[in-house]
Amino acid sequence: MPHSVNFRRRSALLLLVLAVLFLTHLDAEAQGVGFQGGVSVDPEQVFVGTHLETGELFRGFRFRPGIDGGFGGDFSLATINIEFLYHFEVGRSGWSLYQGGGPGVVLLRRNDNTSVHAGTFVTFGFAHENGFFTDFKLGNGTLPTLKFAVGFTVRKKTP
Image (tube, rainbow, N blue to C red; front, side, top):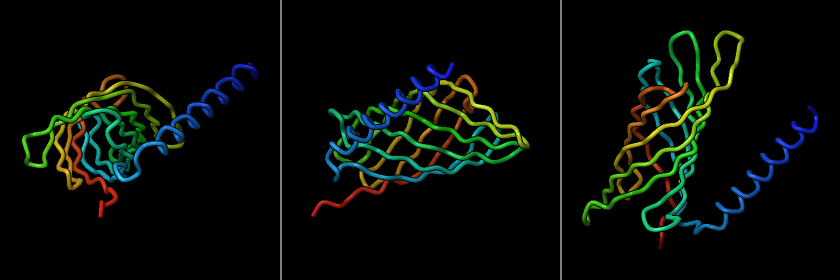
């Protein structure tokens, strides 16, 4: 058993190092840090969160991992989203429609008991080049069934 725990730790560390190297290699001006908030249905909660959004990995395709904290009812959730998005520009308006999804991990806390669950989700939304966005996430597994979020991504301004 100690060998498998050691292997998991090494694998997680390797993935973390690769992700950091990958993200720091991207054009720093295109990256952004964002904040979002909203409501979820099933469970009925309010949530707030933060994310990192890469620049375009290739035309229209971005990576946006994030974490949300949900509150309400007799429990709380922390949701870690590993999200891949594809943006479709809407003419020259500065707006884009996007869709995507990915895996998610949920830490569920009820009273003093914490449990970890996994699932997947799909995302549909729209965003403006100034950073404003809004989206819907449809989850399965133990992820919230439906989440509606409004947020803003802050990016470095080009001179």
